[in-house]
Image (tube, rainbow, N blue to C red):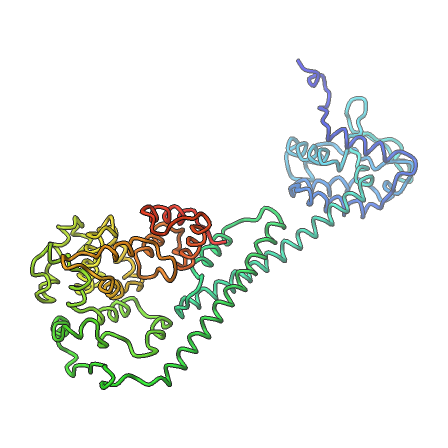
Length: 499
């Protein structure tokens, strides 16, 4: 049996400190405060300490048993002696719960026990209400710690005001940045919008540990807003400049080399492709009018409209020049556009692509654009630029859903890269395509697919990641033509974060 079983109260450092405060109050010259001031600072400091509402309510109950002159009389201390049952009844809780809350106030150093011989609470007042003797609960630690508790409460109130101010500011900034990002996306402006959206989503869900962390987030949002506003303004000025120039730039005439459009625009698509093979690829028939390309990039279009426009640039000769390996898999594939379209299942079987992926491509892209995408996939797989043709084709399908697929650009780039008479890429072209470009944009290259697949989601700005990779590689003297450059880029993308 421990000594606590003999009717002793457990001693803790916090209770000893509270008792010391009570003794200090009884010394000559101890500070006296009014009852109102004591109650106010007790409740404010209790809230600053993080005490729950029940303990703060108990403070009101304890002060209800004191009188105003108990706090100003220099000969007595503000000691009260209500029973546990009375306190519990006034608080509306059980006796054991009330004891728990009372011990919490003692541990916080707001009250102390002024024990009698038997730990019973008792006291007497004279006819004027002055305390003659008392044993019970001593509230004098509040008066002794008045300056300390006041400062604690003031600091807490200041922190609360700062928290509210920064919280409101963060909410306003989040809304303004979100509006900027959405507006830029609607206008199809170039810029770090995906990165901003990703960081904004993180900050929206995050919970700050203190005011300093919240203030740091607000500063980050303010910096982000400044960067995005600058990017938005530049993109807007660029579009306005392109629009103004295009209005006054003369259009090409037939004499300057433009092929007139056929009068019968309702004829089948395959016939339109096969009618003039020489001009179907390489001529101006597949070029936009001056200034139109810039406007196309800035105007927001439905994904289906993007696919339809992209299809206008694709011809049978273009696919044949860009993807000569298809005829090795299916002889006679380039006899006509209809023949090429019907080779889809055979090509999928030859490249080990799941037929369901081909059906999905036809459903999303349409039969003509689907066969062009499949041709690009198989040709890149054959020369070693694509390891998994099925996964690559799925990527093209998803980009088609999002309105970001431009198969014609891939075909033009592949055709212009140069092929040997045997139907494969020339060695210099293979080296060029295998090496990471040291300058310029990576859009419409295989490196764009690598970054999309391995960079953090949502997909960041491709050229921003590419430029960061170039700086990182140059700092480490990494050769962009290194055979392992793709693996190096994948590792960089997985660890890359927007600063």
